[in-house]
Structures are given as C-alpha cells and as structure tokens.
Amino acid sequence: MLTALLAALLSVLLAPAPASAASLQEVTGFGSNPGALKMYRYVPDGLPAGRPVVVALHGCTQNAAGYASGTGWTTLADRWGFSVVLPQQQSGNNLSQCFNWFQTSDIARGQGEAASVAQMVDRQLADVSGDPSRVYVTGLSAGGGMAAVMTAAYPEKFAAAGVVAGLPYGCAQAAGSPYVCMYVGATQTPAQWGDRVRAARPGYTGPWPALTVFQGTADYTVKPANMTALVDQWTDVHGADRTADVSDTVAGFPHRVYRGPGGNAVVETYSLTGMGHGQPVDPGTGDAQCGASGAYFLDVNLCAAYRLGKAWQLG
Image 1 (cartoon, rainbow, N blue to C red):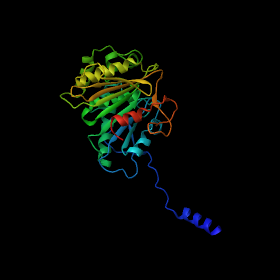
Image 2 (cartoon, rainbow, N blue to C red):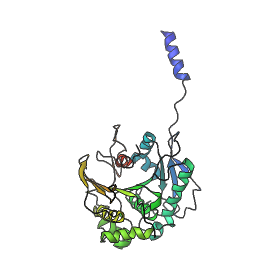
Image 3 (cartoon, one colour):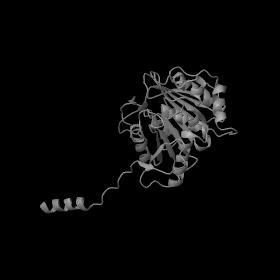
Image 4 (cartoon, rainbow, N blue to C red):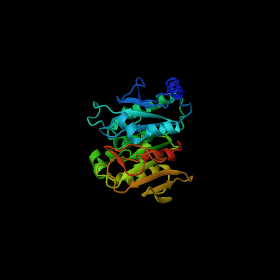
C-alpha cells in the first residue's frame, strides 16, 4: 500500500502543470489616443484567429479590471472563445472616471475619447487577427452612453451594441445638460433622434449596428425615459416602426424585439422591473449565469453579458 501511495504522489508531483489562465493586459502605443484613455484587453489562452471582439466600457467610479470580472465578460470569453477590449478612463479626463459621453469633443468621429476607442479596436483586430465583421460594443451608465457614441460615430466598425442603463447619442446636447438628460430625458421626435446619429457619420447609409438595451425601472440615476429614447433613435435609424414584433418575458422581465424592414432584429429591450442603477448579473455556475454582485453589479437573476453574447451568437 505504501508503494502505491508513493506512486500516486509521484504521479501528481510529476504531472505537467495546468495551463495558466489568461489575465488582463495593458496595451500601450495603440494610436495617437486623442482622448487620453488607457487600453486593457483580455485574450483567452490559445485563442484562434478569426474570433469576435467585444469592447466593454465601465461605468463611473469603476475601472477596466473590475468591470471585466464583475460583468462576467472574461468568463464568457474563456467559454466561448472571443477577446475583450476594456478601455479605462483616467481621472485627468473626468474626476469620477466617467467616460465623457456628454462632451461634444469626445463624441465626434475622429476626436477625443471616441477616436481613442476606435484606435483600440483597430489595434486589437490586428494583434489577434480578429473578425472585423464581428466587433461588438457594450457598457454601463457612462460606458453605455459611450457605447451609443461608438455606434453612431463609427457604425462601420460594430455589428451590434449593448447599452446598460445608458443614454441615446446626442442626449446631453438635445437636453442642454447631461443632468437633464439623465434625470429627466430629452424631448426629441424619433426622426430628430435618428438625425443625430446620421449626422455623426455623414454620408453613411448602413448597415447600422443592432442595439440591445437593459434598463432598471427603479433607476433614479439614468431614468427609464432614456431607454424609450434609445428605442426611438435606433428604430428610426434602421427604418423600423416602434411597435414591438416580440413581447414576452425573460427571467420574469418584460422583453421586446423590434424588427427592421428585412425582418431582422434591430432593437431589443429588457425592462428590469424594480432594478436600480447598475449592471444586471446572475452569479452562479449555471449555463445562463455570469457576473458577480457588488456595487453597481446587481443580482437580478439575469446576466446582461450572457444575454448579449447569445444575441450576438458568440456562443
């Protein structure tokens, strides 16, 4: 028996070490970086060429590492095989580390923070030989506002976007103030909302990114009126009407799908009944579970990253 135990011990000691898990890496020199942002990324070990890229933008007071793990995006990247770009705001740009979704100089094509994020996408695609037709952008709160910025200013770079508790493009300019936009909402017709997107990329005729929105009904930081405005804005851009083609529930929450003239889903919404301001997560080991609960990561038994990943056919 002793011999058998020694043999078993030796087999454990001599076994090859398991492959180390990938970790978040900072990338420097990714471009002229006019918005003075930092670039981080997560690339699963052994990721083959031709895989999708997800850009994930943190909320105010957050950072790239916390958003990567809290949302569940890195776990899903390992499971499904895609890479994640995580821009990080710097306090020199915004004391609360919010992306400046409300600053005209940061939301215009070729300028400021929007241009910096676009440069990160180009660098990532080059470094990992990613699929340029399968790049997606998502974010929470100010990051959600910046996700909407990216799809308006650089629509050719993104197949779809996921805005979590965020704002429509040009909302601060339409409302006259970011705070009015957040706490009340801007008064615009769907056509006026759509015109703001079309003006961000003059002459562009499509295809336009699809949009998914997650919004808590008890969110008093970014009022639910902003989800309505996002629906108005992007159904107008896609030439779709504002009557949902699918009205059902997912995990007990109202879920709507709006289809474009070609029959494809162009706007999708999750109205998270009773949820405050934050990223919906569903911690656990189940197939549809992901994320970790914490400040602005709200356990509501629905993981936004998983739902987006499925909508984007990442896994």
